Image (cartoon, rainbow, N blue to C red; front, side, top):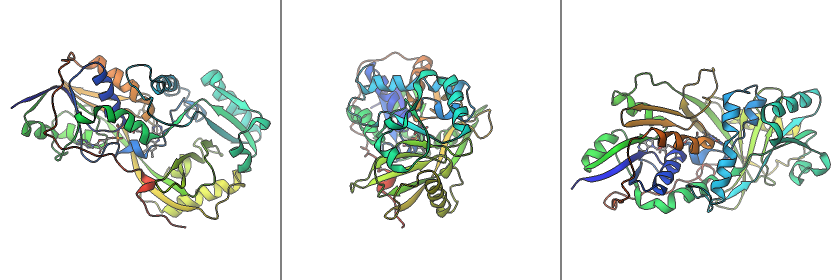
Length: 382
Ligand SMILES: Cc1cc2nc3c(=O)[nH]c(=O)nc-3n(C[C@H](O)[C@H](O)[C@H](O)COP(=O)(O)OP(=O)(O)OC[C@H]3O[C@@H](n4cnc5c(N)ncnc54)[C@H](O)[C@@H]3O)c2cc1C
């Protein structure tokens, strides 16, 4: 017997999950199909920062990107308060704000001016007496700038989005052939949406939907430091336009604290020697955060690509989410976790189907689990 959906989505990362929640709240009969595990791609590997644009303004990108992203934290905050279509009240906020740590001197004044011009009052210097304990203890010397950017516990965001709709998130066992999967199971859909990151382009190519489609992958070798001394959420700036390290803190299943290290330290080929990451972090900490105790630290890396629409600016990401449509089939990249709400609202403007209100029963399809966080699925070295 044929099963009918208003919309089928492929890929249960932040883009697919946020979209599903929006659609279900509006009464759409939607099905989300995932090949690995819920959150398995970039989403659970992300740092969970809801960017305000400050980092990009600092890097001289006072452009559409810094501005379009600066509206996002408020949108997320209202979802976290349980207001709006998407209810994230069950998700955990790891930190309500972050710090930009700028080692002293002339540069600090310049940076403050740039960021202030770009983003206004969401940015302000914190007087040394008011520094939080973790910054005082780190031995940092310079300017600490308050950043109005929450950091979310991404695993809890994924669950908050997926749990209410678990009965319509199912496994696809033939990810290379998604259209065949629908045919094999007699599933009809008015609109088909791909939020399957790296797979999107391959699928579009095989379906002959790739005219004028340009995407890019930007590799990272993320650092992970186990037995971190305390929670810290900061962009540590050095002498280049990329932070020495962007530090977020996560709790592993064994209760230990992990510092997850992005930014300059992680900007290298996935095949690079992990020791290069550890060395860069140790060197940066020794120079700028000499109070951080590293004697019991254990280290690991995560090689991963950021996958997005192709940017006009070499080496940078696009200003906003990318949607490539071929009739009723849409291929999407949010560009950032932060942009998931914007991607969903742009897709809602594009799709050409009304909510049928009647919900199909997808119990004949295989269930799917949640993914494991990178720090709970790695080996550690001293
Ligand atoms: C290390 C790292 C840190 C980051 N930190 C941040 C941050 O702090 N803040 C921020 O805003 N952004 C951050 N980003 C960017 C952000 O994580 C991504 O933009 C976002 O998660 C992409 O979401 P997505 O749903 O498009 O893709 P993904 O999360 O990659 O999800 C795609 C899903 O599709 C599934 N899939 C693949 N093929 C198929 C198929 N054929 N059928 C069905 N399912 C399929 C995959 O298994 C996966 O679950 C970071 C990215 C990386 C790599």
